[in-house]
Image (cartoon, rainbow over the protein chains, first blue to last red):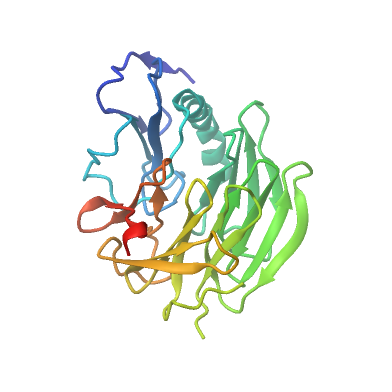
Length: 212
Length: 92
């Protein structure tokens, strides 16, 4: 896959758009803290796949939080501090698009994802029950953990482990060292809608439909 | 540990970058901000008008994203694109 390079002026808001498999990479020298939001188009956290047009937009901003663009539809947002790190992640993520596109032949629903805080691995979960772990430092195929009985609706990752929430209400912890299940953290009676892990890795917040 | 201030299902949860605050996006359209600095999480603020009214299984996102310095947070919103709220939790 050819990668295009272009210069970007750090002082203005820069936007790169990825149309299906094409990717543009901006090479800049960070001046102070930069915050940027890798955003996936579509509905919320839906990953691009073969049946829908995919756009990946990255906003680079210099030390300010004014100037949000209104044309971004409802998206899951995330902040990264190290601009260069995310650029690298974005490039490799795009090269993985091809393998994502070919491996999802008939995706039955939305796909959810989470990067590890160090940006090395991307964990994706979806309706077909398989959990995929992409390693950005290797060109290998993603590691696949098959959990065929469950519909996964949420995932959150730390550097050593990740936590997956599913439609049957269970929240399960997996190790990234072994790519295997470690523990069931909690079982709710209704589907899990979202998961977040605290920055110190000690707490996991779980949003489920259950209301007493 | 259960946070039971929400009367309707919760759509999304988000820690800030220091781990001291938790933003809970509820299907009633309100974002509940909890402080985690004490043993029991304390509800410190309810933010209305930031996120849309969404059903639990809606594909659109209501997840709050915290600015790295912790002074502001934003959330996607159907009517206004993206909106940002200042985190004035010390004033409530």
